[in-house]
Length: 115
Length: 108
Image 1: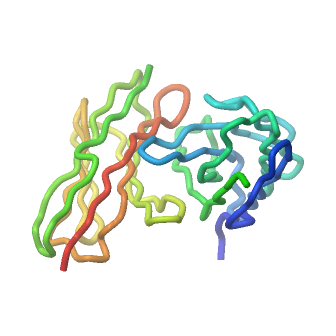
Image 2 (image 1 turned 60 degrees about the vertical axis):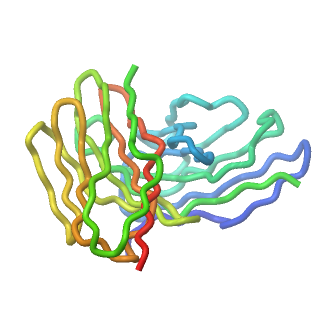
């Protein structure tokens, strides 16, 4: 079955700790995205990547970092610089960001909580 | 700046009671309007993409329509399993912009 997987489902972060959220897709999609979802707010874009070894900041990139070493994988690191990391994190992918056919498909999400 | 506003924030219906959810938007150069369904604690599930005013799409009890300023998600004779948060998003020149969602509850 093709799809997007995210792990872990729940993640706990201690003060001053960096944590990494995993996102893998086997849809052969070129573009991948990370969003943050907070109660009562729309999804906000953290980072996106159109091709391997290239990524761009979204609206709320401060305190986060990403890498795109493989087409299938787009991990997100929440650094200690992110002072309010508690949220639901969603990874998505699409066929081609520039080509017009940009329906994004989402993974199941990771809930990050601060201890 | 592209903007999306969904209304109402929450809607409670009886089983079989039809209604509509609204998504108003402002965007420079609409490339697509998307509807998603999201269950609690899960990722959004894609429902529809609409590209131009006048376009309509249907799936089971759901029908999405699009004008130049807004989109409606009509739900006909809903069932309790239709309870979810419905998200609207618009694609302009730059990125996908999401509304805050409408939380729909269908009581049996």
